[in-house]
Length: 262
Image 1 (cartoon, rainbow, N blue to C red):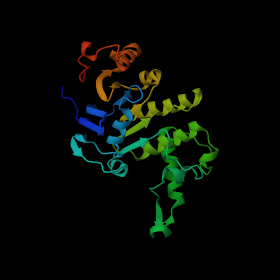
Image 2: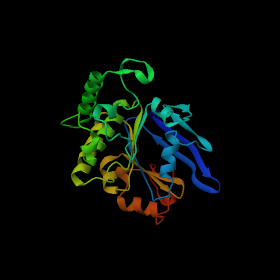
Image 3: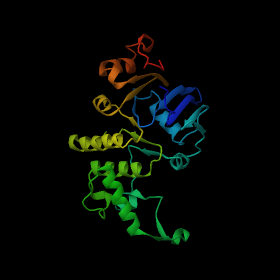
Image 4: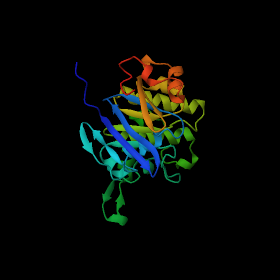
């Protein structure tokens, strides 16, 4: 049985800042409908990797392929236009605006397009926002409320619903529950599971291994600026992943075919 074309494939992606090797020869792939986690210590290269594949920075060398075709993102807007939506820890939300205004921030629907004097179609944005929230399973009682009055979990859910509504290729979540309580974390994780059921590919960056093992199909381990290994979640354990992250386990010692990048 042939392997499907990856939604995202990274070939020998490298980024150096002067003499600092932030990322070297990164090899990565994400299959259709797959949920993958990126794990590693601080400084392992995870953030650099995300910045490169979302157009926030440019690599020194290497290729990024989307659905088998080479792409070159000059900016995050380029990546977004190609169907990659990213939810950062900072969320990039406007606290003084309501839910529809945040969901369509930078993508406003207009009745009449006159540049800075354009007339917004608030009804259309409200209706489409309600549909996005419903599809994702996000419950917001009053969409006219500004985000300033909402909890961290509600804001995170709005950001994920926005990403899911506009993503054509994949969603990237950067530590989606790092600042949330237990109940809010559980709600966000349920939404992520719903994305899986809908077949939306996803990359999650997380230090929470319990969360990683609950949510993803494959784990990619970063260490000292390299992707040293990928492991199917069902074929590994938290202890093995911790050993790979810390260097206690040599990836070359792994025998499974799924240690393909070791």
